[in-house]
Length: 311
Ligand SMILES: *Cc1c(COP(=O)(O)O)cnc(C)c1O
Image 1: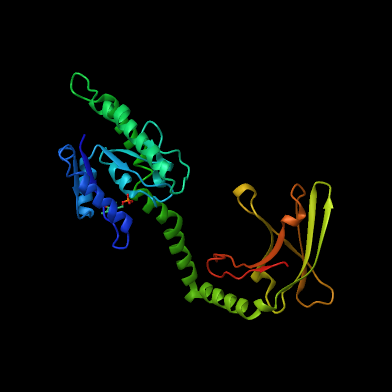
Image 2: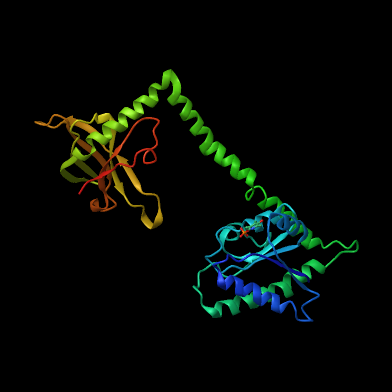
């Protein structure tokens, strides 16, 4: 086995520098010299050679410190296999058919015992799985199981972990809709753009004066009826939306129910009764009413982050 090490430590990263120093001491040992090399000045040119040349890419961060792991992705199209900690991209990508995994996918802080355990795991994997698979060859000298794993890795992972997919998704989900929205706003000498500016100015002018009045909650069988008074002062009622909000359960999506604007409140110039019904399964106290800006074609809260919560 040939171990090729490359990497850089940030000038402020003393632990990283000490690690590289420890490696350069280790590789000077006579028994290590034929098998280990450290390549200095890690940069994109060097990476290009590395990802094309290696058979196994080993990445051993301490979970959760791998930000992503792009270098492991670069290996894929070159037919290299990954043996890495279940962290960053590998926690998403790993299945037994495509490579090898270290760790249990859990976080253990900087418990030094963990280093020992995972070092043993790494040696065991290399000795018992990776190296035998690489050197088990058929009559033509082909490592058939290894080649099968390369094919699985390339076929399953390259479409998902590629810059092509990323750029396409950004283009389709964000850049093209943004370009369309920009064109819509420019039509008729920027009629819609002007409307947005007027809307935002009105929000700035009136927002501090908005207020909630009385709230009423009534259970009706398995439904719960919420009614709340909202005073909009000088603001066009169509410039906002009133909704009931509840946090998601167990990390799920939050619940947002639009409240319907009812009749003008007696004696108020621009006050309304808003109402909505929800299932009574959750306690009524889970729900809070809020006013948020609304304008067709405008992204809230991206373009205005105003919000008024019921107290
Ligand atoms: C890919 C690459 C990195 C990032 O590697 P990670 O595994 O994501 O940390 C850093 N430096 C160079 C030169 C690279 O080519």
